[in-house]
Amino acid sequence: MFKIGLVGLEASIKQILDLAEEYKQELEIISFPYIDIDEVENIVKEHHSRVHAWLFSGPLPYEIGKRTLGTDMIMVHVPATESGFFKAFLELSDELGRLIKKLSIDTMTTNNISEEALSQLKIKKTTVYTKAFELDVNTNELLQFHLDLWNQGKTEGVLTCFPSVCEALREKGIPAYRMSMTLMEIRQTLRILLEKVKTSYFKDRQIGVEIIEVEYFNRVAEEMKTPYHLQYLELRLKEMMIQLGEKINGSFSEKGNGRYMIFSSRGAIEREIASLEETVQKLAFEAETTVAVGIGFGETAYAAEINAFRAIQHSKEMKKREIVMVQDDGKIIESPGQNNELQYEIRSQNEILIEKLKKGNISVKTYKKIVALIQKMGWHDFTTKDLATHLEMTERNVRRIVTDMCEVELAKYVGQEAFANRGRPSKIYRLL
Image (tube, rainbow, N blue to C red):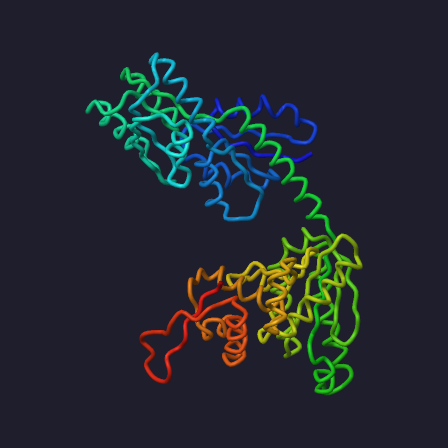
C-alpha cells in the first residue's frame, strides 16, 4: 500500500477523502490540514520521509511544496480549471438572480483561467478585473483589491481562491464565492496519482548494474615496487567497492584488471549516487589514475548489464570521465545529480529527421545531445564555441557538425557576434 500525504484546507481534505474511499485498498492517505498557507512549507519538510507521494488540494500549496522539497518526489495537485470557475460563477449569478456582468477575480499568475473560461461562455459585455498573485501572496492585499473595486461601484460580485478573503467579503455584505475544486477534478487527480505511484514503484525495482573500472590498471600494476604492493592496492580498492555494495544493498563481483560490478535495484542506485561519486574519487586517488563508471537499468539482468556496458563506454569517451547512466528506454544521463547533468535520447522514430541526419552524416546521438544542451542552457542562439565548451569537443569538430546541420536544414546561420575583440567574429546559429 502506498502512503500519500494530503495537504489542504480542512474542507478540501474532507472532499478528497470522501472520493478517495474507492482507492483505500491501494492508497493510505495521511491528512495534513493547514489554516494558513505559510504552514505548508513546514508540513512537507517534517513529513516527507513518511510518505511515498504528496497530494495537494490546489496549485498554490503544490508550488510551495515543490519549491520546499526541490526533489523529483511524486507530487500532484487538484488543478484549478474552468470547471471550478463555472461552478462559482453560476452560484454567484444564482444568488443575485441574474447573470453577473461586472466581476473581480484573484488567481495565481501561472494559472489565470478567468478570461479563457469567460470566452468559452461567449457572454457579451462582461467586465472582469483580475488580480494575479505569486507564491508569497498577501491575502490582505487581495481583500483590499476586491473592496476598492466594490466601493467604486465597478463590480457586482467577487470570485476568490481564498476562504478567508471570501468570508471577509461576505461579512461586509459583498456577494463572494470561492473557486473550489469539482468532484470530476478530484477523481481525475486521484487516478493520475495512483498511476504515478505504481509506475514509480515498478521503476524503482528495476534491475540496476554499476560497472566501475580503474583505468590503465596494467600500467598501475607495472609501477608497483613489488607484487605485495599491488596486492595491498587491490585489497584497498576491493574494500571500497564492498562498502559501496553494502550501501546499495547490492551483489558485488570483481572482474579483474581493475574492473568491478555491482548488481542492485534501480531505486537503491539512484538514491546513493553521492556515495558512488565519493567512492570513485577515493579509487582515483588511491590508484592515481582515472576511473570510468557506467550504470545500466533494465527489466532483466541481461538488459541492465548491456546498458551498463554502453554507459561505461560512453564514460570512457568523456575527458573528465563523468558517471553515465543508460536507462531501459535508451536515454543517456551524463553526470546524474550534478549541476551539469544532461539527459538525451539516442533513438528517433522521426523518419524525416533520420533522413536528414544520414544526409548530413550526423549521428542521432550527437544531434540529440546538442539539442538537449541548447534546451537546458536556455539558448535561443548559440556559437560553435558555446557548444565546444560544454560538449568537451574541439571547436573545429563542432563547427563541422553545425555546418552539416545547416546544410540539411536542422540549423541556420543568423549572424555574427558584434563585439569580438580580435580575430574573426564568431558566427551565431539557431536550431530549426
